[in-house]
Length: 80
Image 1 (cartoon, rainbow, N blue to C red):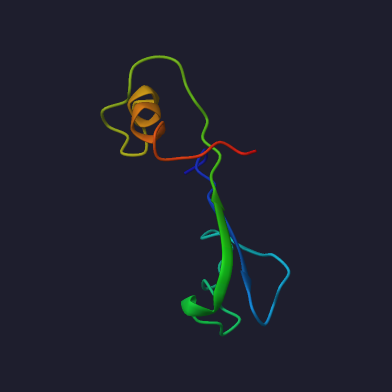
Image 2: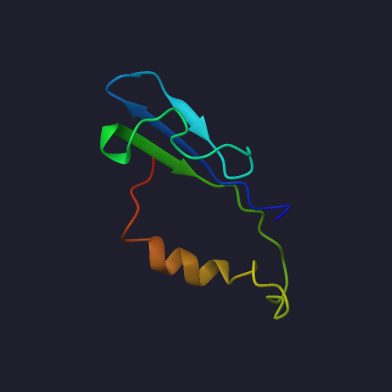
């Protein structure tokens, strides 16, 4: 998990500034008591470290980045 660092940011009607959460933070998601329906905006991001060479068969966290790129190319809008 050294190279997988996902984070989420969200806003709610009661809290209009961005709040951040990571699964590695040790706190529950929406620990402030807000329910998922209270979210008015969200962002998700992850840092992925590309490595050269073949995919490691014994590591479930590795994947073929070119296959992921092909999958996402028509589903994700680049930042403007």
